[in-house]
Image 1 (cartoon, rainbow, N blue to C red):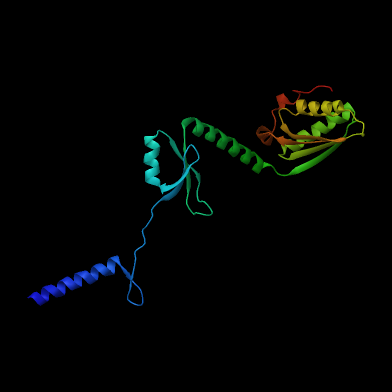
Image 2: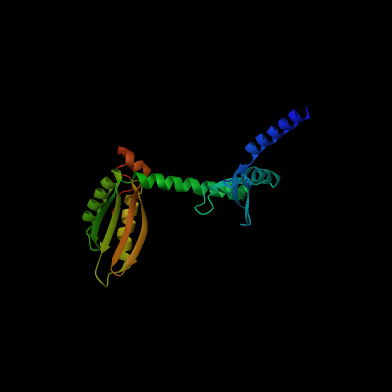
Length: 213
């Protein structure tokens, strides 16, 4: 009877070892590695960095009345997601920035390409307005327009200002002038199409914002 009981106990021990332990080829036990579940990199409001698990980070955010925000899905070095604890004000500011970036990305992805328009600083009023209408059509087709205005070496900056301001005024509903650069006798800037221009303009607005130099 004792022999049967001993055999049953031995079988139970062997079954337990099979489940809980790994044995190498030479018969030695391989220590079981600790499984770290949901480990994250956590950044506190004062930019201190800690390694913790997601559940602990969530509990900490509740205790400190902070927002737990994921700012990176996976860090390239640590292979861990990155979270940050934020105050309500920081979270609100971050959300506004994210929305702005999303809008800009959406607008930039819709741009078909870039067109170049070159002008002389001595361009006549009629010719300038003709070019503005040409740019309007390009913006309506959702092209970005790069404008280059060239003049003489002793050209006054007031001449460039007049051309720039006239284009800005007349293209107010069609696009946005950005990245103005004055260098020597050259003025450069880009005109980005507005979101409304992709769907065409309201005919009632065609004569708005038009005026002489």
